[in-house]
Image (cartoon, rainbow, N blue to C red; front, side, top):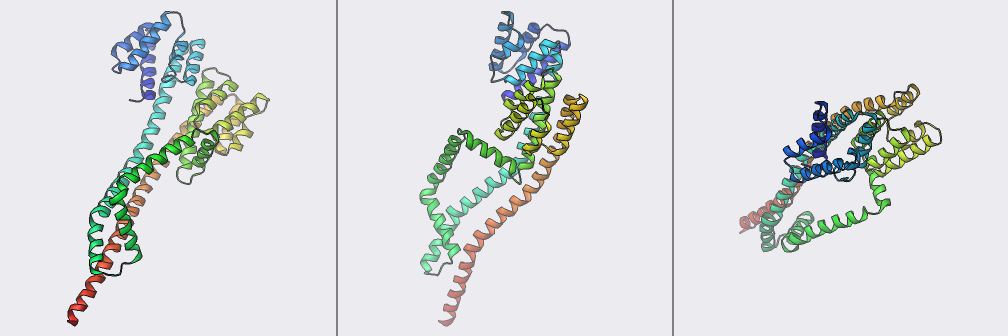
Length: 351
């Protein structure tokens, strides 16, 4: 179980205990006793020790950012100050479960395509190392003229059998390490994040996920009593996409100058016009937090629908690609073989 899911379950169970009238330390002790994850059990024990020494709950959580990021700590601090800690914990649990659900659906939609690709690679590897060499020896022994595509297939097979078994994995690992190193450069990460948003296939899903995450986060912060400037700053820090982070920073600067959110949100070209219109109207009516949560719920449903559509389109496309590769290999091997049989039959007739 990953850390986000562990923390989400922790918020949910703690909210239930607090609603039942448990004092905070007693509730934490109860959770520590029934926690199956030993590492997180130690984290809860540390929280109890700090609270008993006089720290607030949010101060204790801030000492373990691996499980409790700054955004969540700020929300809990606001809940402590307003006396709505149970409500904030419940909101964090709900938001966490919604985000986990979205990610799980996205990963599930990738399972079948990945399995198809793995089967394709295994099949191609089997053909290249087992079937192709047999035909290659046959062509060489008969001295037959080999078509270019067949020769290319034979050359690739020879390479795989002689060097490919260690060269290909080394190239893949080296490319992954280089890519990871390049991502340490902020300009490269910014360019990658921009490509994610502009991609024809994944771009719409990425933008909708960003809309859901940003609107829900900002709405929760405002509902907890955090002012708009601080809420924008925390939302900016919580997003992993540098393009979105830059847009939220511009929005914060505009608000700090006494202007509205409309201009910077439209300039990012990430947030749909209807969401921006909703934000502008909500600012005028004083219902910004509620409208942001509402927008997040609407676009979460759209995101789920889009993932289902993309998944249903991806499966037949991958099957088609694998079929084309297999047909290419088969034609490259069998057409010269049939031609060779025809030539040998002609020779036998002449004799």
